[in-house]
Amino acid sequence: MAVLMTLRVRRIEDGLPMQIQILEGRIVQTELLPVEAEALEGIPFIGPGLFDIQINGYQGNWFCDEHLTIDTVFDVSRALVNNGVSMFFPTLITCSAEAMEHGLNVINQACQSDFLINQIIQGCHLEGPYISAEDGPRGAHPVQHVRPASWNEFQRWQEVSGNRVRLVTLAPEAGNACEFIEAAVASGVKISLGHTAASPQQIRAAVDAGATLSTHLGNGCPAMIHRHQNVFWPQLEDDRLATSVIADGWHVPAEFLRTVWKCKGHQRTILTSDVSGYGGCLPGRYESPNVAVEVLEDGRIVVADQRQYLAGSGALTGDCVLHMQRTCGLELKEAWNLASALPAKMFEIPCGGIDVGDEATLTLFRIEEGKFVPIGSMVKGVFITGEFTG
Image (cartoon, rainbow, N blue to C red; front, top):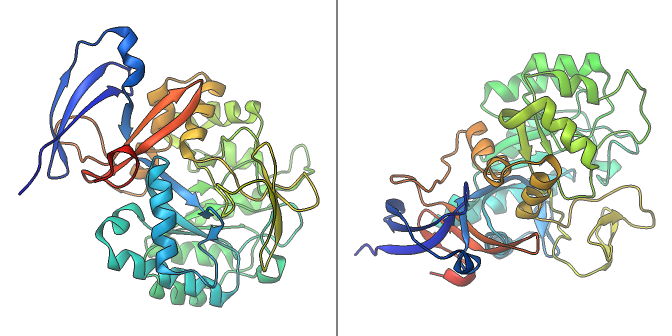
């Protein structure tokens, strides 16, 4: 028998208190509530579920780990939902063919075995291995596994994934890049440009071939660039490209975020955390088969023994939303949309909402002392973790 669920929350667009009733995964009634201003602080905000297209892992676990298990996929997914992320793309970075195939196969098995995990994991993102081999643009990706794009290799991976790969990040200068882009786009896979030192001409050729996104622009690029011939101007000016950015306060400066916002606006700016597999870990040094990293006291995650090259983020999606809001002077709902409705629209994935008839895939949170405090997430009307475990 279906159970009617009632929530008292604050609307993300104006902070007004309201009562929402949910039945069979959809909102069936909403009503504004008269609540005194001093009582608002105890009522959580609610917004469409956060959707992050680039999550590498969490709490010491990586999706590209050759020892990944179904239980680990469940654990990471639950941890992310508990932190406000309702949907995400597990992201597998540059690794061996065997590790890539294993990770995709395990993620597919996890989705097949559990209805809610299948709703939380909306696809997979391959960030590599078809990227630049140069120090700097390669970032923390292991150089020994960087290679030219191979459509045959990708088809094998797509098959073991259950056709779950929705996004591939590659460098325009990688071998066979344009041919790969054309084949991938024809198959329904979106292509993003990243970890690249490409020339403007190579970037334009990749966009002409069908690339539609830039991956964490401002990162995965040369440390020193030519003032005219560089990777930024052709990506910023081309309206065919949407742009993802990591607004965690470390990956790019405030001026860069504001520039991306002015160039791409509310239709082509996507927030991602790019959270590392070491996100959520205590400060210290961590070793993996491919790279050693350090989690610093301030929360940054860097390639070990230096401080220039970051190795993914330690922040999560909600933190990035609030930083983007403050940095660019946005309304909360406007910044929230960049990490929920906009990426969902790009990948044609239903996004939750707070109007009658909307799917109840939602994120509940508070803002305390300017920080994002997640309560948890609801997926199709089911609270999975947090205060509302159900």
